[in-house]
Amino acid sequence: MSKLYDLPVIGIDVAANFSVATVLKQNGDIYKKNFRFNHSLEGFNSFLKLFYKAEEELNSRPNVFCESTGIYHLTLLHFLIDRQIDIRVINPLITNSNKNYNIRKVKNDKLDSFSIARLCKFNDVKTSFFTSKDMLHLKLLVRDYYKIIDLKANAKKAFTNALYIYYPGLQKAFADLTGKTPLTFITTYPTPQDLLDAPSDEVLTLLVDSSRRGLKWAKSKLELLKGIASSAIVLGINPLTFKSKVKRFVDTYNFYNNQCLSLLDEIKDFINGASFADEFNHNISLLCSFKGAGFISAVTLLVEMNDINNFTKSSQLVAFFGVDPSVNDSGDFRSTANKMSKRGTAIGRRALYALALASVRKTKAGVPMNQVLYEMYHTTLKGKKKKVRLVAIMNKLLRYIFSVLKNQTPYEERNPKIHQQMFMSQVHNVTNAA
Image (cartoon, rainbow, N blue to C red; front, side, top):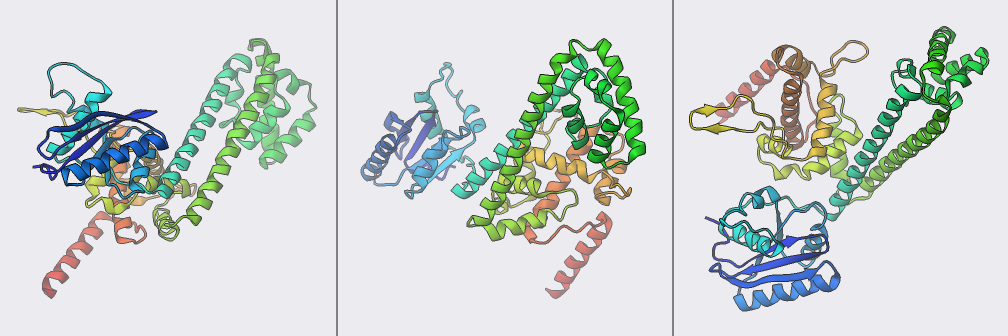
């Protein structure tokens, strides 16, 4: 039974510029329905008047619920919390699955607010974690960083595709066109003709200075580039127009790169000045004890999970990141083609995926980054599809992360059999002590 069965409830359906509220009495009858208020100071204050009036007339403080709408509910949420009003946020997946209680198909803001109030009053609904203003601001900074990373990646992809038309073959000369050497080269010699007209000594000097790979490498690369340029003059479609495209790409890429660096500095400065600076920086160092985890990955994982104390079991953390498998059973049928749910944080999953990829690789010296996970990926899970193996590694990493943050101890790489022996030894000692 719901804990709010004998208490008044307010359901709020949030839109971009306004919200609609419905108030239910203790017995479930409607006290006030379709109360619309704008997202302004005047509008929020009008909702406060409704709240205090309902509290006075119903002789009980109403419980307020609203649906998560990305960003639109955040101002109302923090406005009410700042005024000591308990408002809880519910996942739209929950409300959507309960809006079809009526046979008639109706979808509008007025009915939605009533549905939210009715759902939260008569059902034991799970609510989202509260995020403080400082943590919310940090989360938005991190998400801005990933948006710029995506813009930079899209610009790079568009430019690489353009090479097939204007400068065919150039992409074969450099593994990464955004590295220092290729960017310097293509800025100096943006068309095939520019390269062929340039003195060889000049080009060699540029390649040696930018790459620091030596003269032998530079001569080999120059020979390859001249062959590509000679072919591109014939195959390329109007390569002269490529010069302006090169300039736009380099300017755009450098702009996004500078934005990323600026945001990283802003994120670091904000963390150091925040109220949770000491604890958060300590948790960053704990996550960085995983080989392959960097600063931005650690920050992303921490801001997305908000507070590890919100989770009592590692399986809850796995489900929050959407790495748990979906279930499709009916009667005697048991599906064997279940995918991961992906109902959790997409940004957090992105950082976790990068950490999983790093964990199953070897260093330049040929040593696995994480021996346990490397063997799990390449031996234990051998025969399964790559994505299935990586999801299993992500799942395992989250369980490690849960333990590290809960115990506040750095990650220690252990063979599973040895770890089991240590655990059983501890259990034995505790049993004997008792």
